[in-house]
Length: 116
Image (cartoon, rainbow, N blue to C red; front, side, top):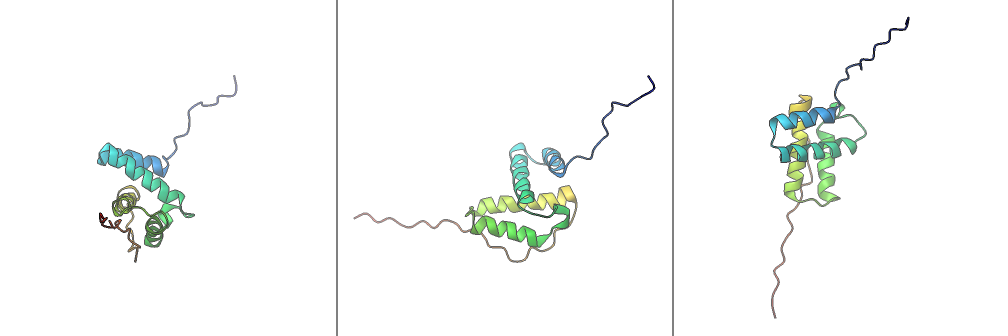
């Protein structure tokens, strides 16, 4: 009658993780896109500050935590770093300042076993 209410949903800007998934799907092979999305999600959830307001210091802290506390392999730490670079370079289009020193993950040292 007199109340003409539109039932159209207002268009909303996609959330950052949705943007990352879409962009990764366009640029990367599916396994890499899923891996990157997972690392980016972990990075964002581990911080108290939105990614646009963070920089190299927070990235270094996250990567060092992976090596020191979570004891990830060097290749895992490198994948996390590549994902975060993808976030800043491709999704946010924001240069990432120098993270400074980062504790690097160490390869597991194989101890030789001697037979008696």
